[in-house]
Amino acid sequence: MANAIRVEHIGGPEVMQWVGVDTGAPGPGEALIRHTAIGVNFVDIYYRKGVYSPPRGFPFIPGEEAAALVEEVGAGVTGLKAGDRVAYTGSVGAYAEKRVIAADRLVRLPDDLDDKTVAAVFLKGMTVQCLVRRTFRLGKGHTILWHAAAGGVGSLGCQWAHALGATVIGTVGSNDKIETARSNSCDHVINYRSEDFVARVREITKGAGVDVVYDSIGKDTFPGSIDCLKPLGMWVSFGQSSGLPPPFPVSLLQQKGSLVATRPSLGHYIAKRADLEASSAELFDALRTGMIRPGAGKQLPLREAAEAHRAIEARETVGSTVLVP
Image 1 (cartoon, helix red, strand yellow):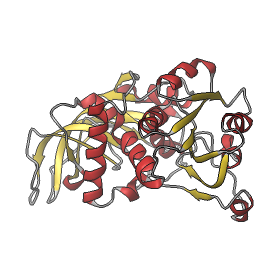
Image 2 (image 1 turned 120 degrees about the vertical axis):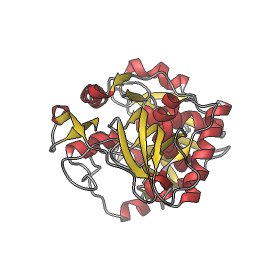
Image 3 (image 1 turned 135 degrees about the horizontal axis):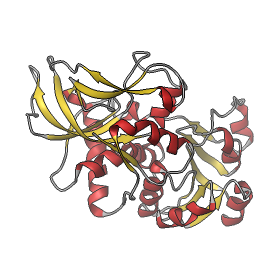
């Protein structure tokens, strides 16, 4: 028996209940793990609010990333043993003290990286790796716009993009986050709530526009994000913290300059084991070399997950939030 946060039905943070659950024993190809640190992400909120449907419906245990210790492995599992430090992402059920999980989704942690650091950035960091290395391969000479530049993904994304040689324009939702965005290697910072960010981007780029917009905000930044792009640019919509962008005719992309629009999902990029290993290895290297520097985010006990959700939805947080069992 272990304790976990269970969401009984669609609703606010108050629907998250602290309950006892039976983890069971690992079956073939599975591992029983004990969590040491759990990352909190906006996708957890989407599931709770019903924006996305939980894979197995309600009730469910949220959470898609964590660091853990292996306690037991099932038949046929190779390359893992009890006592190994591991991390994973993409499998709902992390808001728990223990769980059983498919062993081939676990990545062994290097000795030189601690559990809380990895739990804070594993999903976000691999999301960024895919966004800047595969969705749009950034390099020197590119100019980008990254919305929510002080948030969990935005903080890492702006740092990584800058390290790759891109000129980074970041947006924030309040003046008190401007310095945080600057510390995340943004060359320019715009408060999109008090400034016309489209006009500012055009001013900064001398009318040229940007090569790519990374947009996790959604409704509040559309269609402005499209209007910031240069011809042949790409709009990468990878979240909707303010709500879904409205439907638009595909002909708009042609009218605005033969643009490309994409809605990537990390799960598709790391579905193959080889891609999971390659993405995580590049993330670990980025942490070691200082290409990305996780900020000091909020840490809360696991049983206070509802408070973590409330703070994130109110946009009171900076960096990544971690739950500690």
